[in-house]
Amino acid sequence: MGFKEEGQAVVSILNKYYEDSIKRKKNVLDQKPLRDIVLNLKLAQLCEAGGLEGKALEEFFTSYLEYTNHLHHPGYMGHQVAVPAHTGSFGSFVDGFTNNAMAVYEMGPAAAAVEYFMINYLLAKIGWETMPYDLSQWARYPHSGGIFTHGGSLANLTAFIAARNMVQEDVWTEGNRQSLAALVSPSCHYSVTRAAGIVGIGEKNLCFLETDEYQRILPEKLPGALEKMKKEGKNPFILVGSACGTALGLYDDLSFLGDFCKSEGIPFHVDGAHGTSVLFSSKYKHLVDGIEKADTITWDAHKMLRTPTLCAALLTKDSRSLLKAFKQKGSYIFHEKEQPGIDFIHQTVECTKAGLGLKFFTSLAGLGDQGMSDYLDRTYDLSRQAYHYVNTLDDFETVIEPESNIFVFRLKGPDPLQLEIRKKLLREGDFYITTTEFNGKWYLRTVFMNPDTTIDDFIRLIDQVRRFRK
Ligand SMILES: *Cc1c(COP(=O)(O)O)cnc(C)c1O
Image (cartoon, rainbow, N blue to C red; front, side, top):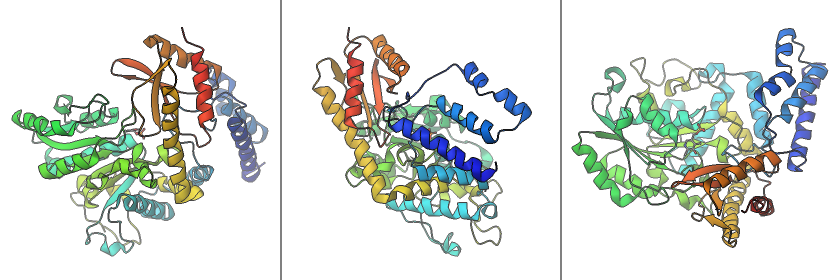
């Protein structure tokens, strides 16, 4: 057999996997011990002897798939990872095959052009000025910009690098000369506080803002926090708002935060890894009203835009922010050489970079803009339906009506019970959910990522959870 036949065989195996998953014929997750997986997949023999072809190839992938977390199963209500559009996985496959490291234009003109276009697509959703296709205009004309990164964590780090440069232009050569400090929510994603550590701000210079009982930044407390920080001799270089938070999936008041940052001259970053995608939905885009006031935005396509991992964007209101932030060669001149495209390499932490734009494009173009919008509406609607359903039941507690597709609830009873429930559900295999700690209590957490999950699946989940009533 050769590439073509083996490729077709792999597609057939994946097709069966998909059918079994959506028909719930397999457990969502059948977690085997690591050692067993290594042995059963015969990894050592195959590495040693080679011959991963024909029957061996088919056997390998068939067993490999047995040990996966089946995201296409409608009982998958777990982590915030996309159930990819199948066209998106073709993007991953073709990118893996062609392996065009597109951060340098001539290493991947098609991939670079697709990335450029898809960044523009997102910029237009925000309402920012897109990048010109006449590249001679790039440096002359004010517009927005951005880069795809391998994940939102790296996008957040990139935002910190850009913001630091906005308040201290010579930071690249001189290091941090002032006592820089970041204004963040205590419930911000850990990649945000980690970014502060990486850029050398120091954990003690993270200023945790006051929030309401649901972990949303309290706008009226901001002036006081800023004053206190300045009295301590600290210079704020970034304020981070969430769209949306990880635990409860609630959105900060971006419009207020944007106005505040503007009046105080503080760069405003929106960590919208999960929830900026509502810009595709006319029904829910009001949740990010004011997002255009940001200086930088993190936006993951591999969460709510049906795109295979990894594909995240860091978008900047001013296209020059990234070039200025990475001025390693003492120059951020755009056209260093005569060429028909651009080298993204000057705007990113990464060197060799995959064709992330292609995965995103093939996912979006498979569904179309309206299809993506419908998907978002469906998943965001579903969490509200689930909330209203759970509220009719006496033996359950909820926290707040969900804003996104993230919904937390608990069976009345002690904390260890919630953890026990999750463990048992996972072992039984019909569902995959997570837990979260909120205000000192443990909750069950569902994230509706799968386009095939319905309210009936959720009701079946609740019926299963109910069996654990004490
Ligand atoms: C998922 C998430 C991140 C991290 O993004 P990765 O793509 O997982 O690196 C950061 N912030 C928020 C709010 C998130 O939801």
